[in-house]
Amino acid sequence: MRTLAIALITAAALLTGPALDARPRLTPQQQLDKLLDGRVAGRPTSCISNFDTREMQVLDKTAIVYGWGNTIWVNVPRNAQDLDDDNILVTHTSGSQLCSLDIVTTLDRTGGFFNGSVSLGEFVPYRRIAKAD
Image (cartoon, rainbow, N blue to C red):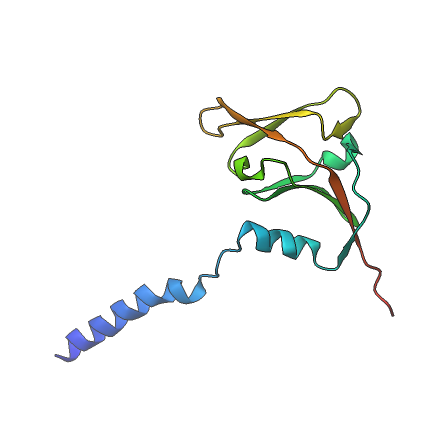
């Protein structure tokens, strides 16, 4: 009987251990809110430099975030519901800037086939607020 009790307690501990360590996954909107924490929005613009697009993060059905460091650029596409963070975005630019009129197509990550497009909106810069000493 004692052996059975120890086995049940051990099994319960093994099953609940991972659940205690699991952190709730943030929603895309919560991820965006976290990225914007401590930042202030600037004036929206139609284009950003290709230099600012080297770092990109797609937030599922929410937004595309470009840049890093003190300034990040947030673009909420007109059809943001079509954004899938598992897709590959392919941007066709006509110059040294990414603009809201540029064509952004989406490819399935596993098959590599075309599965849609995204209509970019304006780019909103978010800059870090300088901390007062």
